[in-house]
Image 1 (tube, rainbow, N blue to C red):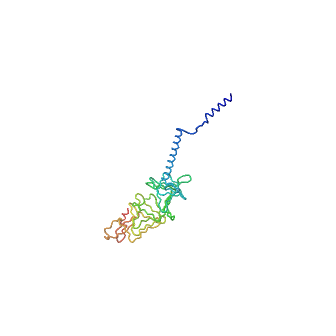
Image 2: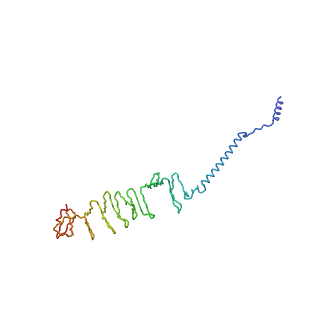
Image 3: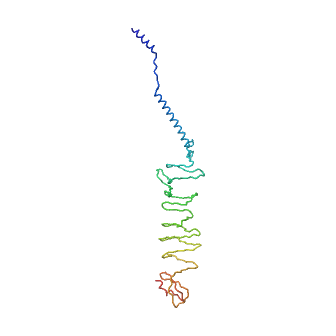
Length: 288
């Protein structure tokens, strides 16, 4: 009995043969896989084409990008450049022989910062004004000579000559200190204070000289020449006092047009018709 069963199993295995199991992706799964592979290849080609196009448009090279070139000394820009954000640089200069332009629709601001990013110096060029914010402002020549300096205490003009070309002259709200004030050749020099007083002071003297013209001093009320310790000298070939008051003349006197200059005790001058003797005592009523 056991032998018959073994023979029966042997005959069944030989009649059916070896069984084969298929391994892989078939059907709609296979088609989806091919579709995704093809889509990935298309995306790669599009990305590569876009990268090449961007490199071509932006002009990427080994030395830089577009007008921007990377050199051993820094960055080099050729042509016009536009900066949308702040620019931080140690040195900005143009090519040899070419000017450097800064252009903005509103203003151009240059700031100098310290280690704590605090603004020390600021230069603002706007559409209406140019402003400089600093502790001291200086203008010098190429040789280092000071031409102009300004700070909180004083303003210094180091040039040999300061010329004011305005039609209305120059207005000084407060005092001015200078060793020399003169006009250009063949021009008038006028010192005027329309509503207040005009005072000139000097510890060693004041000299007013008109070499090729006349000197005129005009006032509305009084013109006073005062010397505390010295004297007042009028040195001229002719001295005219045309508007001096004239005292009453004596009828008995001569009609000659010769007058005597008289001085009142209060210092007032008047004229009196000359006679054989002094006539000033007769005309003392003019002094009051």
